[in-house]
Picture 1 (cartoon, helix red, strand yellow):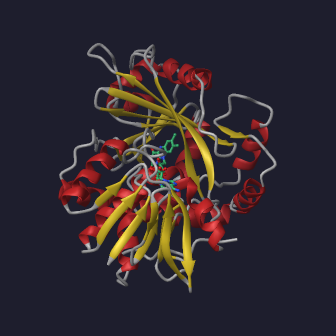
Picture 2: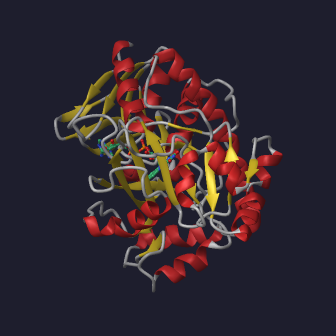
Picture 3: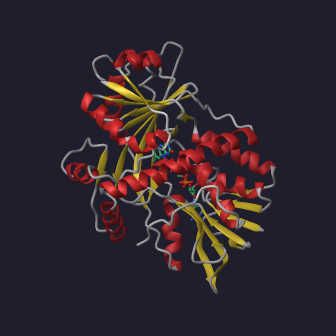
Amino acid sequence: MDALVIGAGLAGVTAAWELSQSGHTVTVLDRQPEAAAETSYANAGLIATGHAMPWASPKVPGILLKSLFTADQAYRLRPRLDWHMMCWGLSFLRQCTNRRAAENTAHAYRLCRYAQSRLHQVTEQARLNYDSRRGGLLYVFRSDSALREGVKHREIIKDMGHEIRVLTVDEVVEREPAFAQSTGQIAGAVYCPTDESGDARLFSLQLAEACRKQGVRFVFDCAVDRLVVENNRVKCLSTASGERDADIYVLASGVEAPRLTRPIGIDLPIYPVKGYSVTFPVGQDHHAPSIGGVDEDRLIAFSRLGDRLRVTSTAEIAGYDVSYKPADFDHMIEVFSALMPDAADYGRPEYWSCLRPMTPNGRPFVGSSRYDNLYLNVGHGNMGWTMACGTARLLADAIDGKDAELPMQAPILR
Ligand SMILES: Cc1cc2nc3c(=O)[nH]c(=O)nc-3n(C[C@H](O)[C@H](O)[C@H](O)COP(=O)(O)OP(=O)(O)OC[C@H]3O[C@@H](n4cnc5c(N)ncnc54)[C@H](O)[C@@H]3O)c2cc1C
């Protein structure tokens, strides 16, 4: 079949790869001049299966409330008169119970584990090299009580088979000598040896190139304005450069998905949650970590990407604005550089901010829609790098009418 994929981020490029592997003729449209130019551009780089716990949990409403009065919180709520923000917020709050958090964690974990195995297959098939590191990830805690809570938080995924080791400070330093710089600041870590890291943008660019070699066409600088529907089918896409049609259409447009589907009667509960990312060069004399991870108390993620160190933080619910100024990064750089003073050249930051396409329960929408030839691969939230290769295969299986290797539970729709 002829397939048109809207979006060339992680979700769109992986979908294009899987669809072309299944024998479809694929064209990818993106409004940007190249692949992975929006949210997939500079994420934390973590394939964080050991962190597959969706954000909605009983403690988050309190943190969001506090953020209204404190500027340096990692979670930040900037309320505004936005009907979609309010609806999404209420749905999110409904997910903040112990029972829902447990269900959503189990779902996310199954998906992440499957996706990680697919990532390895795709990497091998397409011969990709994206500064990946398979030495595990460290989730570090600054107090014994936080470490205990972090271990408890992972009981579900541990029971589901994820390898989890609890490390003392000395064991952390033995595993990752860069933490010798953090003396007195950390209490220990959860080490997940099968977690990994890599540069999502490099991966996407290289996979797009591999797709091209398989015959996939990419059309950049091409914004889709509207999906034209007729008799329960998408008839064509209206773009600035005219109409385009195909047999099937795959929506992989990240945070923009609801704006395209609302006019055709699909109200996807996806809302942008802004994150900040900064990348520093690492020189010969720096003591940069080779293992990525998360400072769990400050919610700062970090990863080593070749001769760069990426640090990301913040979940700001404030609409579609992606602008930033250097001062927005001051707090996270201050905290991280205090943790690892010699890890990188902190004087040469490369700033970036982007929007996570969040669903209230952390589950992406993958598969069919109410239109016969419209398929979804959207809403990957804070875990899109970890999940991308899995959701792409599940999508291709759904399109081909095959039994999925992993049953996707129906996402909760309003
Ligand atoms: C700070 C930060 C850190 C993160 N860290 C991690 C991490 O460590 N691990 C992890 O697993 N995940 C992480 N994520 C999440 C991950 O980056 C996202 O889930 C993922 O990038 C989403 O990919 P996507 O393809 O859905 O969206 P995008 O990458 O945004 O791709 C969507 C594409 O659609 C295009 N598009 C949109 N609308 C239109 C239109 N109308 N017409 C044409 N094209 C259109 C856009 O140009 C864009 O290229 C992080 C996110 C952030 C913000």
